[in-house]
Amino acid sequence: MKQEDKKENFDTGQPQVDQPIHEQLSYLQLKIDEIAYNMEKLGISEYMEMLHNPRRLFFSNFWAGIYRGFGMAIGFTVLAGIVIYVLQGIIMLNIPLIGDFIAEIVQIVQNQMQMK
Image (cartoon, rainbow, N blue to C red):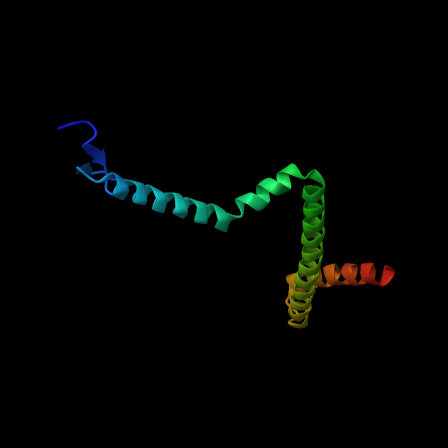
């Protein structure tokens, strides 16, 4: 058997004997199209464009940072409000040691909020 007659099948890794060249080319074309589709789906071209345009990259990262910071601020505010609400509920239960400690923390937070 000639070296050219024995080709590997890319799907199974098994050797293919006497596969016509147009079938091999159509298979390669199919795989190239699949790779191109996946790269398009990932947005590689937009990313490469952005890397070549530093101004666009800067503004994109700047706005992403602004949005991230704003989201963290809102998230922390909501979380702090929930924690204070829960702590106030624990104070209402009058648990001897924990209630006094939490009451002091809540009073400190309320004093800080009144100062602003």
